Image (cartoon, rainbow, N blue to C red):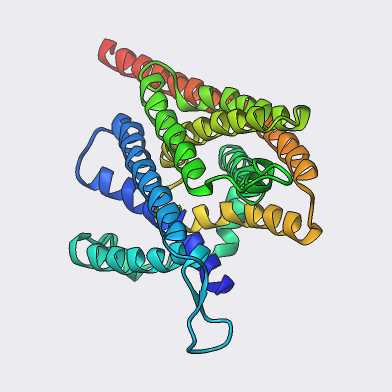
Length: 325
């Protein structure tokens, strides 16, 4: 089950983004509109997540955890119900995708020549500053997000008190995530994504630091809401950046390469069995480093833009000189 979950998660965070960017370009949409497309994508994703959290809470409360009587340890109801509902949703998603989505097979000539190998692409990522900074920033932010997923439930649960409605809390997280995606669409009209990225990671860092500095459950909850707003801004922002930085012919593979350090971070935290307080100390540090790497990425993007402008100026000067002769 965990092996399949790892494969499906890798596909989830590489295939869909790659498909979206390729489909956006193949339909002739403006390259500058890809950020708005990602914003709408994650806004809809948040709406679905809100509904999922509400339905999951309803399913968990509908009936108590009950033995099926068919086999030992086979249960239904209680906190197993959301997993059963998720299985039905996955089957419906499979049918819809298979029936209505078009496939990106590439151009007919692509099959005649093999592309770069996996090792060559790893070398390209490590040797290209923009690709490397983009991957590291992605690993640090998303790694902190996954660690947050493991630790948020004990952090909002008070000792010797009734368990809070986790499904409703999750739905409130998704509302803030949805708000964040719309904020990105608003800011993206005037600010480039690489310029927003360092500030976003710094804000997320302060959210996790607030959890460390306060033991009040409500303060922790509010910090989590603010962090989810950062998550809502991050995904369309990073989707736009990757769409600009990562080469189209190797997009899906490089997206999966980016997940290698991310998975290493998450597995290390799980193996060490960190407490929530230590876990949030780790995520605070990761987000702070990620903000610094994001500043490096912004610098590389500005340097490349200046280089492109110099090249254009040289071309224009050459054309003027040729006309003068």
